[in-house]
Structures are given as C-alpha cells and as structure tokens.
Image 1: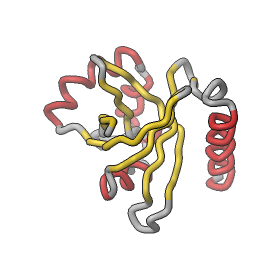
Image 2 (image 1 turned 135 degrees about the horizontal axis):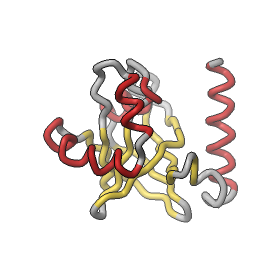
Image 3 (image 1 turned 30 degrees about the vertical axis):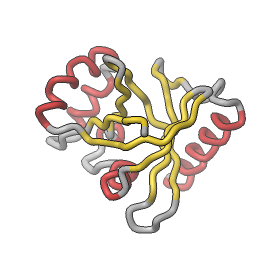
Length: 139
C-alpha cells in the first residue's frame, strides 16, 4: 500500500509540474499546491500535494493526514526545517512554514472547516490529535 501511495504522489507531482498546475491543482473540490520540505532526518527534498486554503490574504495548509493519529511526514519535516518551496498554478516561491499556536488555530479553524468540512471529519478520526494548521509566509 505504501508503494502505491508513493506512486500516486509522484504521478500527481509530475503531472502538476508538467502542466504548470493546469492538471493536479484541484482535488475533491479544493485547491492543491505542491509543498517541498527538507527531510528532518535525511536532509532530502520531499514534495507532496497538499490542499490549500486562503483566508484574509493568508495561505494555509492543514496537516490532517486524513485523520491519522500521527502527523504527516511533511509536517514533521517543516517543524525541523521551516523553509519550504510552494508551487501553485503558474507560480513558485520560497516560504516560511509557521504552525499556528493553539489560540491562533482556534480563531481560524471554524473559517477553514466551513470551506472544507472534510477536515472536521478528519479531526474526529484523529482521536484527540489536534490537527495543525500551518501558514505559508512568502519570503
């Protein structure tokens, strides 16, 4: 299963890049960006497609891992190395990934889940894990 998932991710990233985001920039009704982090142990660059949510001129990604009890690897990577690369349709830029504090998250979370209700379901599945919200600040 893990090999199939890696194949899916690799194909998605390649398709997104090949078409400049014309294909692969939407999934399940939401916008998708490519997030490149640096491996917290390996130091290797890793790129994953992640749903983006823009609110009040700010760009966020949510480390839901589809409701897993564990944070996704990309979140663990950016905690160790917050400098990331973001690719959205027709644009690529460097950013600093900053997880929101619990207080900041509490303010923005209702707005985000109103636009993407699946994240509320993921939070229920996570069984007590607070799903991090990360702001991507261009640098």
